Length: 93
Picture (cartoon, rainbow, N blue to C red):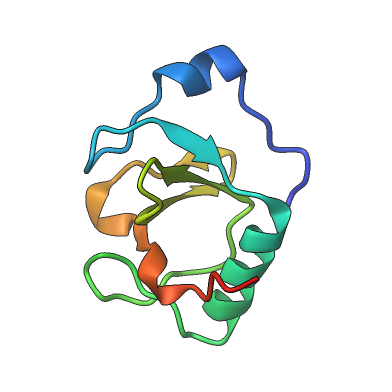
């Protein structure tokens, strides 16, 4: 995980989830760590049911917190099929 990934708040204000068209918020470091642990143990899949490849450095969450939009290599992965359903994550923390 790269703690140096940032996005201009003005840009974030215009970004929308490609599925729900809702506003996005930035995922916190604890959630990124949880996601990467699940990826490492091959327990996380994308919307197509395929294993999520490799760790992410940051992520965004849609308004209803149903989808996680990963960031890899400084690129926000906005492809609908590559989003990660949040239902796979234990949010009881």
